[in-house]
Image (cartoon, rainbow, N blue to C red; front, side):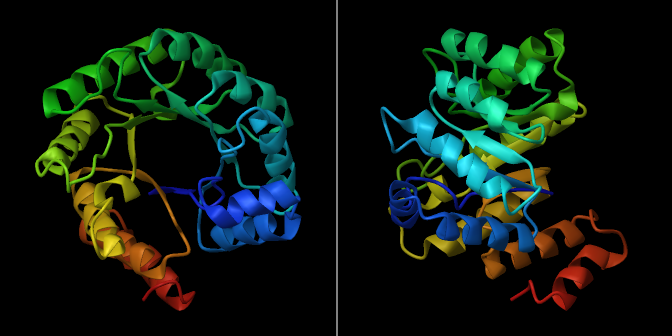
Length: 264
């Protein structure tokens, strides 16, 4: 399971304040904590700083890379920002994200190829967001075809079938789970990924809902997630779900996590 540590995101008040104040210690503590908890990538986001996003994101990248060798997930809604900060990245990154929207596809695809990046592909086009199973799978197929025909290895593609708040659409999670299962079977070698927190928006006990979604998605084949790796209960569910799905030979990863005190 590939874990993208989500905590260095400027939508979080403490992170925005640290970026604004140039507080390296706070950012670096978050990076180290996620690295120690088992993250495979560290997500970096400065999108809250409109007008100086690139400048702020460069600072975050340099700050994080001082304390960890983990690759970064570059998270920005603006392809121009991603292009500007890529030369500051030490290891081949993950880019979040590409879609079938022509402007985004044409801007991001050359960067993926030039920097040998992995890439998150959203199931959306210029005029359509994949809502039902058929739309999600159809858009995923078009994304895979576009990227692989351009030279992107399929194992560097992470399809995000999109998670919507279950409080506004009771059937949305079922559509996402079904899409994950079909995508993983239909496109051999591709990855699926999701951000968990959207599902619980507006509901009480959000972490319980997020944990439950993660377990159900793993059972359908999900092999990557954007999450908080320092959340012991969430990681405990993840480790147990992977073990029960036969993805942890002799339960060794579960046992290692227990010995490291990562389970709760």
